[in-house]
Length: 367
Image (cartoon, rainbow, N blue to C red; front, side):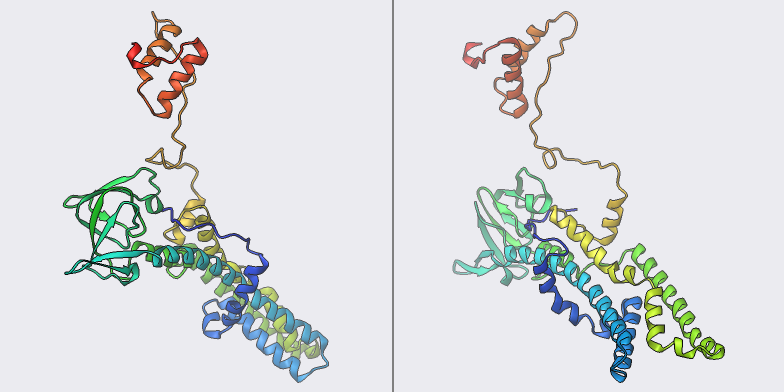
């Protein structure tokens, strides 16, 4: 995973503002062409329409109206859950998009420099970046050497050196130049940069269904067909048994919706989007839904960096002398050897010797 620079978007799943903002999207998702992607919810939608027509034809049937209201609530809730999850992803993407569109590039021309929005850059454009500038797009350094802060993209806290003519010439849009001056040749087309791909992933636009989701969709569709056939056959049996009045279309539709796995079908896509959103809130970008599922099974994590996930301030706790040496002699030698060490570890050795053995801190000139 990568750590995007997007800020955390507040509010839970049932935040009233988020629900209100997502409601228009939920209503738009009632389009049958959208609903048909989820067979279970499509059946509920058809059932809602059927019960509505029957209730209108018999306005005095309060039971029919109650069933109609509940079916429409079920359908809208399913869409609202997905719309809320997508809305949170879009809010994260908007944060990334602002960082991208707000970047101004200094493009080199035949006569000098011109300032243009970073989104206007094309492949082959050359831009100048100096200390403090944000690199406007993905490209290669063609002139100069600079230290670059890539923590927003890679999570690496330490600056990295990027120079022309070597293996370390590639730079990513959205990273910051900390020192010196470089000329970058843009290599990515507009809309195809690393940040653009991150935005698409966060929004859920590039989210592909995982094997588990596909398998569950097939199971839900199969169960829906089985229960649909079972309910359809109830009507002929009821007519044969003389109980036709007790098995009206409204009752059968309600029974069908109760039997089919509505909740799982309603929340399946929302669960996938919400999983990626939970990771983004913690500054981790899942590259696919499969990665989110795999993360759920992880019990041991091996990392190749320490500074990225730790504070990097290990503290000396004890002096352990070998045979023939006292702890005081070791503390004295350790303190002398650590005087010039400005790292947290080196300073902690000096402090430990002072606190435990009363050795005052000395300057190298006193040695």
